[in-house]
Length: 104
Image 1: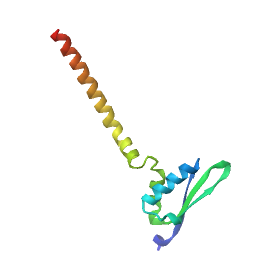
Image 2: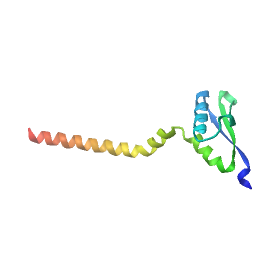
Image 3: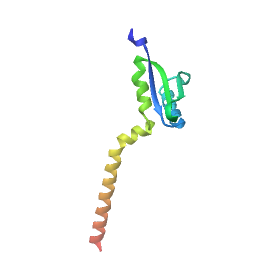
Image 4: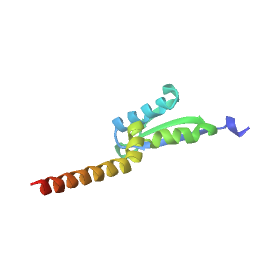
């Protein structure tokens, strides 16, 4: 029964604020706050760690790596959309300028 095996998942954070952000993402992902440990590591860095079942390891790692939260997910996927909208706006602006120039 490997699904009951516990594994340690940890992440390094440069500041205490970064560590608390990681803790927040883990709790939003459904991990209990009292199971998450924040400790001071070497060179004034912090370590966030928690024990999870091996079936939840990937979920914990995704929560740790998702630095931008839901907005970060949108920003990654929305970058192409923003670029496309910018190009369309530029095209409309150029077309309007050329049309106005012909009318004069």
